[in-house]
Each structure stands twice: as structure tokens, then as C-alpha cells.
Length: 436
Image (cartoon, rainbow, N blue to C red):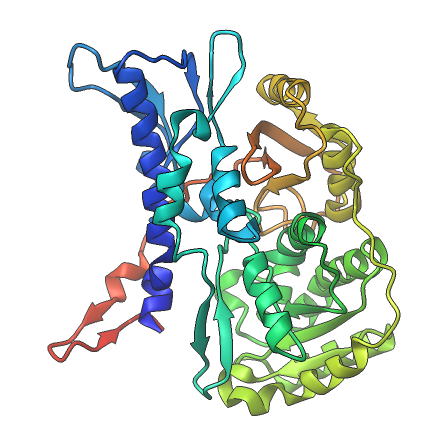
């Protein structure tokens, strides 16, 4: 378990190495004469740690004659284009091609410079030759499971790999895959980006909710969400119904709500939630997998077997042929419930540039807070009209999508006041403690 939680079996370290190899080759090329004519470098370094100090840095300060200082930035590795490329590649050949198509900078004529122009994609593929292979692990009950690909759908596309999903579909009768961090983020990107690129169509959606989170969205203070509060739950259930509406009526998919049960949930709260969902003809299951293992998830398994056979009318939120702004507006309107989209001057200029380069047909990957349908983390209920504020737009030519940065979201997170690392330790016998 520690290898998954701390190192992700080494996959993320390989991605970090490949990402930063490309960075070093860019600066090395510039040092030895800049034959490609770099005028602007857009490729960022990365690391698999939350470190807000690295959101903006100045590099090349050694004072050596040919080193040119410049402003640089770091992403967390899961938000790196390398992570997305590994997840969206079909095989080793496709991986190498996508890595080569990464836009790393622009010359004086504002023409893109690619990783393949630096002859970097071969060595990067070698570093990723094992990382592209899915990881076969097992649950505590020895059930096989595949873990492969990046989380963080608030700042990345947040899906597991196409290779892992298709491998699982070949090996199993039923495949359940995760698209984390809110259905407005994870599910939207899974459906509009991954399914579009992989030619996949899910047979049903499991929408996971917790009573604690619903009370929080109902205005209950975080410190009190473990206390029974039916009024807060009644208010917070609106958030759940918005997600249900998106899945059923916007994407046209069948949905079942999985209530991830906590020990703090009371019988009154559970009964209210079940009755309200049943009243609105929404399938629901109380899932106790954390406490009871597989036995605690048999109810939802049985209900899913029935649900996957029901007719669906799956559709994307937008079409490839639409403009970048049209795609962003459709996601903002249909999925977030926003009135409109406002753009910074930089975002406007970058959208025009991306479309002029011929990348306007790519899907959009909107990075925003996971705490709200809006781009304001504190606007939990979204009762009043609001707009989505786009501060920047970036092209990910290798991964094949356009990143849209909304609100104050950062692609290099920071640690909380008390980092989890303070509680992680190892005893004299080599046993790791404090992760769970």
C-alpha cells in the first residue's frame, strides 16, 4: 500500500524525470547557441510535491557567461502534460509521437518549437517505458485491481489511462473506473476528453457522495459536519441533484448514487437521503466498503448489473468543430450552471494564438476549484448568478487538449498548515505508520 500511496509504484517519478529531462535539454540547447531560435520557453519543470514556493521562480542565476536568466514555473507532476500523455497514449509508438508533439516554446516568428525538434522524445520514451504499463495490485480481500494514471481532476484531466481501461475491459466482465474530484470536473473530463479520444461509452455512472460533504454544501461548518443535522443535509442535497442532472440530462447517462457511509452518519440522515432520492426515482445504495469490504458493496453491485442494461443516450457537451470559447461556454453553462465566461487579456490573446496555430478543434480541460460549481471555492451553494473567470489558456499539443485556468486555481498546490508528512513515520522494524 505504501508503494501506491507514496510513490505510485514509481510511475510518477519516471514522469517527473521525463518532464525535467525535456527542461534541461531546452536550456542546454539555448546555452549552445539556440539554433532553433527560442524567443519564449513555455515548458515548465515539475515535481511530485505540494510546494507553493515553486509556483514562480527565476532560473539561470549562476552568472556564467552563456546562461540566460529567465522566469520559470513548476507544476505538480500529476498536472504535467507528461502525465496526460501517458494516460492518453495507446501504445509505446503513440507515446513517443505524442511526446514529440509537445510545444516547448516559440521562436521570433511566434512559430511553435516541439520536443521532437530537440530530439528529446526518444529518451523521454525510454524513461517512460515501464510507466506506460498498468499496475496490477490487489485489495485487502485479494481482488485484482488496476491502478494507472493521474488523479487531480481539478487541475488535470484526472483519469486513469486508456491502456488500463481497455486492458480491464478485455479481462473482466464489468469494469468500474474512477474519474475523481467532483462530477463537474472528473466526470466531465472523463466523458468529454478520455471517452472522446478512446472511443469509449460508459454503460452507467456511479455518483459517489457523502453525508458529511452534503451537509458542508448545506452551510454546516466543517468542524460540525460529523454531528447530525437534517436541516443542513436538506439544503446540501441540492448540490447532489445538480450533479445528477448533469449526468442524466446533459450527458444522457444512467446514474446510481453511492452513499459512502461514515461511522458518523446517523440512521435519520441515511433514511432521509434514501427516501428523497427514491422519491425522485434516482437509484441509491448505501456503500459500506470501508468498514465491511466487499460485503459492504454487494448491494450496489447488484443494482449496477441491472442499471447497465438500461437504454442510454450518451452525448458530449460540445463538438470538436466548435471554437474554444464556444466549448468553454457550453461547459460553463451546462455543467457549472454559470451565466457567462469572462476572459483576461492574456487568455484572449492565447485563445486567438492557439486557434491560429490550428489547435482550435481540441477538447478543453478546465482547471478550477473542486469545492464549488463556480470558480470560487467559498461559493458552496451557488444560489446567485455567477460567471466563470478565465485567467489563462494553455495548449497541450502532445496530450491533445487545451488547458483553461479558471479563478484562483494553481497547478502547483501548497501544503496545509499541518502537512500529513508530520504524522508519517517508520519504526525500528521497518513498518510504516501514519499514512492511513
